[in-house]
Image (cartoon, rainbow over the protein chains, first blue to last red):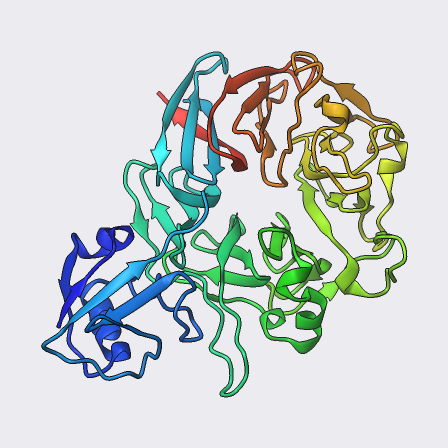
Length: 85
Length: 378
């Protein structure tokens, strides 16, 4: 599926657009990490939790569960919510 | 071949390298590296003189480490940064918020590095910093976890494992310190530790027998006498001469109006009776600024029996700095050069062991850490 990457992660993907395959958010992120090593750990911690300021949206709806099924024809949007100065 | 001092400056918004000429008169600035990334520590590997490790946290992304093998010309991200082991099913696990402290391993183990994290964890790399694994049973030991306390018990930026020291005589002999959680010693390469808090005081009203109340800010081992350690603690300045396991509060000999609270601790590279601190205001609400707005380094040349104020060239007033625990360092020149970085982004230096100070840089981001390194120059 198509993935929109936030600017803070362009150093891994080389730009705003990336692709990865998988039936769930977890599988898509695993495949994304295979293609762009290291990118998953910046978003998901070692206990499998989504990091505090990372947001995933699929079909315009926020995804909170790594096990949630995703539409391979859809687009995954990854957002890094900023706060602080 | 001449050896030139290089300052490795880690800040809240990136890293800078300041390269000195032979006389430490002219400085060439190299940076920013990692602009916008919080760099908690930047360390040179003294075993090869060219490998740098940088502990980074980027905005709100997870933590990582970057490695350079050409003194900062290019950087590669660690393939596997420090991370705690997955928790057993149904139990809450810990996640590394950031790597706080980096220590190169023993001279006889050229690819070994140690890392201390927030929250408290000890990690080790056996391949020069590319891949990391938990290094110690303390990361998951119930007793140690209790001593580490919760996130709320640590510093405002999270509880930390710091001051990782490898005995230059024995790669299996390590010291670590935790804020909070005390000072600890290992004789098995960090696999296990035991507390080393005898003589250390805690905040009034609490029990010093409870390890969790101990808050060492910075511990240093004297290169010229590895049986001597100095410590700047939340509750005073201490010295420990092994094999004793009882710290002596040498900060009692500081002027009462200044006190003996602070963050950094610096030792002389060749004289174990000589050390320096940067006192801060630890009264009432703990402003953690220079006492009375008058910054000064204090030095001892008799192992803490007496202290001298060293403030020539520093502002005479209205300077409300903090110098963090990693942000003060010494080089190996004779006389020794001293350096510190401030919370307000100023870099100060002395070529004569603190007698005279001058400002080397202003307007940097908040300085988290400052290390001195050597670079060979033709």
